Picture: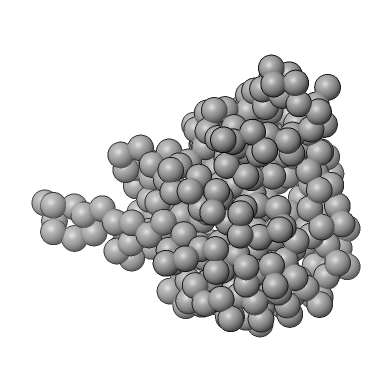
Length: 302
């Protein structure tokens, strides 16, 4: 059978199919719906030092071929994450990757420094790109110098895999990816959501209270594929493809574009079993094309 493992930094994922942060809660929400053994990586809901109530409602609105969200990184905060969420996550058989977020650089330090001694954490995904947070995230993730500096600072705090999540809301995403690599990142994941808006024409105002939100779903698939294609050719570290995967063929397109692994996001709300169907499709694709390892898929693109 094809080798499905994916090496990121000093550690190895059992398979390349992950579930994206913000779409899978802290794992326990899906425990009775799916077999967690079949997931390669579980990217947790964002963790910030203090609890965040999130943005005003409505926070989600459907769009053509996707949805806008303006959650505002609502989460239980670091203390409750350790006491209430981490005990379950320690029992999860797949790799648990904590998504780390904050309003300022020090917040990222605090989360990693506090969780560094805890068992059950495979690695970190650093969210520098959420377009729904008014302070910090978007500005930090669009500046190569800031990205390199923060990555270097966080690299000094941990020997676990460090993944930088990239925003597509920039002129040149490869510049941000190279900055993350130079700072010591083990991988980058791309893309996060695109900034978008819908307007209520009868009430003459944006539907989301904050005006804009993050666009996800199949509408962003071409943008994500183009980003992975470009980034994977600009850096030496692995690229994790995320954005718009709604069916197995979409994940295969990411792997062909150069992704070492993928994350399924919005589709989890529609079909919690999708990651299993994707994994089976990747195995079947490898068999049809006589591949020895999943990493060979990226070399097939002509």
